[in-house]
Amino acid sequence: MPTTQIFAASTLYGVATLAAALDSDCFPAADRRLLLLSNNAIVPETSAPLDTLPGFALLRGRFDGVLSWNDTIAPFHPGGWSPRPDDVPLWERQLRMVWGLGDDRIELALESIQVNPAQAVAQLFPDAPLTVYADGLMTYGPTRNKLDPLIGSRVRRVLHLDLVPGLRPLLLGEFGVPSETVPTAAFVRTIGELASAEFELSPLSAVAPAGPAAPGEPVALLLGQYLSALSILTPAEEEELHLRMLRGAAARGHRRIVFKPHPSAPPASARALTSEATRLGVQLSILERPLLAEVLYEHLSPALVVGCFSTALLTASAFYKIPVARVGTELLLDRLAPYQNSNRVPVTIADALLPPLERPLEADPSPPGDLAELLNAVGYAMQPELRPDLRDAAERYLAASLDARTWRYFKRRRLTALGLPGALPVQLGFIPRNATVRRVARRARSLARRTRGARRFR
Image (cartoon, rainbow, N blue to C red; front, side):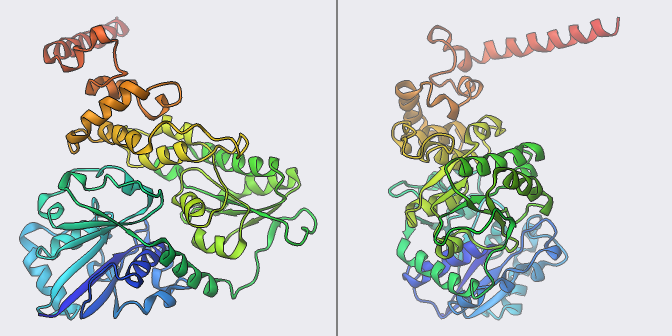
C-alpha cells in the first residue's frame, strides 16, 4: 500500500524545521510528501499567505505538493474549527478524494498538537501515526491541556530543535512519547538557503539616522514581542519593554541598531523607538518585512541579540554563538496568569539561562541549579493532573533549591494549593491536603463577603 506523508505548518520557521528534518532523514521514505499550510492569523485575509513569502520556493522542493487548510475548511477559521465526531468518516472520505490520497496509508507530522488545526487534522485521519514537531521553547514545558487519548496514544515521537542542548522536552510525557532532535547543522544550512534568497534585496534603511556608521561597525538586533495581544502586558508596558531594549543596547555602545517587530505588531508600536533612538543618537533601522530572525543572523552577523523570551534568542546563542541578553523576564514571570500559562516555561528558560541586559553580559546570572530539575518542578506546578509522576522531583527541588533566586519561578498560592514545599510553614502543612479545613475556610470567606456586602447597603 502506498504511503503519503502530510506535513502541517503555519510558519516559515516550521517549514524550515521540517525541511531540515527531511534533509537529515528524520522521516522514513514515503511515496509522496505533501505540505499542508495553515494561516492562523486572527484575520487570515489580511496577512500574506505562507507560500508567497520570500524563500518559500527554496523549501518547496522538499515536498511533492502543497495544500491549503484554509481553503479546505473555508469559510471557517483554522483555530476554531474541528469536525463533529459523527462527521469524521465523511470528512476523511472527502479529503482523500479532494487531495488525491486514494487508499494510501497516511502519516502525519503536526505542530502544536494541543490545539486546532493540528487536533482537527489528527481527528480526520484516525488511523494515521503522528509525529509532533516542536513549536519553539514551549516544547520543553508540559502539554498545556489534557489531550484525547485517541490522539495522544498515536504520537510516536516529539521532533525538536536542540535549542537547549541536552534538555529533554516535557511535552506529551504523560503518554511516554520519546523525543528526537533535528540536527542543528541541517537547520543552519536551511536558514542559509533562505538568507541567500531574502537578501538579493535593498539594504536596511535607517529611520533614525545618527550620521554615517563606521565600516564594519557591529549591529545590535532587538527582537520585539507582541505580549499586549495576549493581555500579559498593556500596550504602554510593551512599548516600555522595547524602549528598555534600545536603551540597554545603546548603553553598551552600539550605534547601529536593528529592531525586528513581532509579525503581529501594529506599525504604531515603532514610533516611540524612533524618537528615543534620535534622542540617544543611535542609528535605528526597523524591519518592515516579516523575516525570520535566523535569516538576519546570517545577513547582519549581529554583535548582540536582545529580546524577552523569544525562541530566536536561543537559536542565536546555541546555533550561531551570538551574544544574547534578556529584558523583562522578571516582570513576565510575575504577570503570567494563570500559573498554567504555556508561556511560563519559555520565560523560565530565558530567565534562567540568559544574562540580563541591564547588567554586564560577562556576569553569569547564577543559574538556579539544574535546569532540568527546575523545569520538572515548574512543569508539575503547572500541570499536576497531567504529570503526577513529576511530584517527587518537584518536592526535591523545592525543598533543596527554593531561595531568593528561584522564588520568581513559583507562586506561593500555587505551592500552597498543591501542598508543596515553600507553601505554608511546616507546622501548618496539613492544611492544603485537608478537605474539611478547606471547606470550612471557603464557608468563612463566603460569610465574610456577604457580611461586607450587607454593610454597604445599610
